[in-house]
Length: 361
Image (cartoon, rainbow, N blue to C red; front, side, top):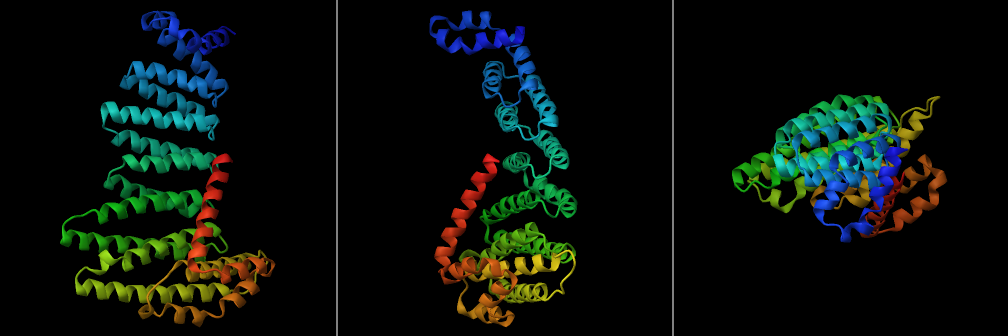
């Protein structure tokens, strides 16, 4: 009750603050009391935003590494039993920003933070807020840490093939690595890093193919493949990349021909898997057909790649879609009638609405 009364008095501070000078304010409400009482309130009610803000006020006046580390420990305690507390995750990011501003060295903190999120994700499945926090940490990682995170998250992803969050995290890591490679000024270095980034994407696609064949009907794996395919084709067909040495250019065009052929073969194989009692084969065929539709709308290539010919080798797209998901016939007809630009617009609208729904959920 004493803590409750103390906090109520703090709520009224803004109304009276103009009549008090800074010295009187600090003497009447010392930081230690605010931190002590607010800690108790937050343990009981983790999403009490005003209480977190009162702690920010104190920490901003007294920037101290030990206090900031204690703050991370407090939010860690709270998140251990309330892993989806948005205010707790938000406050944690604020603390890390403060440490970065004042003390700069975040190597150890970022490493421990990533491990902490992994432990939370083990206990709280499909925790969007935890994975969003882990994606945010990438901003403070160097290239070595990002590569290490890619390596460590691979085993976890293999054990959680239905969790789209872990694959989204891997994509964010790869995108940042790809951006780093594209910023190289020297032409020779740029060519080397371009080839290296393509190899990284091809290796991820190879691993993803293994998972798709092993764990049939997992939508998260097919969504991951869509993004990887788009990154790879965009990388290879980028005008900047095509202007690289002639030998490299020819190798990239050949690699793209090979890749498109492999994708069509994958779709054809998945469409012809015998039915099983668990309905996984049907789900696999549905995801393969949707992937084929996505490729036809999303990937726009020049005629020399003969992409449409490869597409027709698999079969008539409308027939495939109707056979795998007849209940969605109206949706397929509408999508097939749209131009690639319209499909892209709807795709972006869908992504926006999905992101908002995830944030609210």
